[in-house]
Length: 350
Image (cartoon, rainbow, N blue to C red):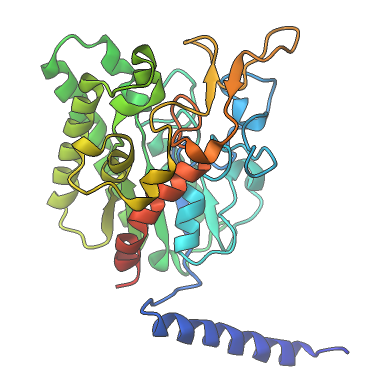
């Protein structure tokens, strides 16, 4: 049976209105028109680093990455990353496409992802776009009309900066040097938040820093049994400085996503003010990653010239909070975002 265009349009309106009514009944001002614009690093990257020959930079396009999803998607995980869960919270049935896939051809109703694995606020060895450069590209697409301005003020930006700048911290010899560098990093993040607001973004989500001293590349020397104090001290300074600088702006449209608390409640509960959540119980391995390189300086997915695997892989990724030496597993991200979802919804749907 054929359906006329006008009849189909009426049907669509009824469905959308019904969805809005149901969402209001459940206490959410569900806004199906929210776009999500994503900036940052590998916690948020859903495939912006193009596939090339296997290397540390391109490993996310090769097995065993994507094991849980069943396909390699350029994500630094066995499955989903933070962006996927934020999109779900926004009511999106699919995530914002990456700039790598979309290029400069067209915008997308879901938004766009500018995040690149390895990025920071300053230039890092991988030479990927910095946070500021990603925002610059975003503004170019708005100015050119590729990204429509009509509902920017009803859209959401997400910033994920997860420690790539602090590779430099390892070479610092004093707490004073650390505090000074952390101050520069947090100031740059705050500047980028203001820039997004000036462009017109309605709401901005900003990750604070997860406990860097609990990541597997830091806990490996102790056989994944304890977190390191010095990197976690740097994390404390980062989060304290970021909070102060963002609070100074006195904006109700900026929300700090507390990754530190959500991660700590699972991997380092003694350092968290909250009781360990129920979701933490599934992780029999909280500091030991599922995918481990045989070489401390190697990477998950690495093979030798003959194709022999130079890594080991666990049988049950869902029991490991971390997937590789830096990134949470799909189950890890799920447990983190489950803790954060309610407060994020309260911010997004006041």
